[in-house]
Length: 116
Image (cartoon, rainbow, N blue to C red):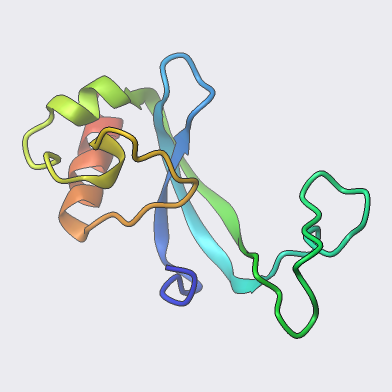
């Protein structure tokens, strides 16, 4: 996914520490993947001694705000919504920081998020 995320791509912003956890809005990739600056910074909580300038290991992208939904599209809603049965975030044990979303899934979640 690191190499697939391009500037201008829209992404769903999922808040895992919210109550309830869920999609809160839309963001956009503003800078494509580049080495994580903190992985090589000794003393930082994300420091990784295996990372080097030649072999960065960890990457990050920058995002910019696009839209906040009127309400959170909760994980329970995602799990029960028709068309989202195969969405990665709805699968048991699937809680990575970044997950792929199909165009169809994106559209469904946006409709759910914008509904009042």
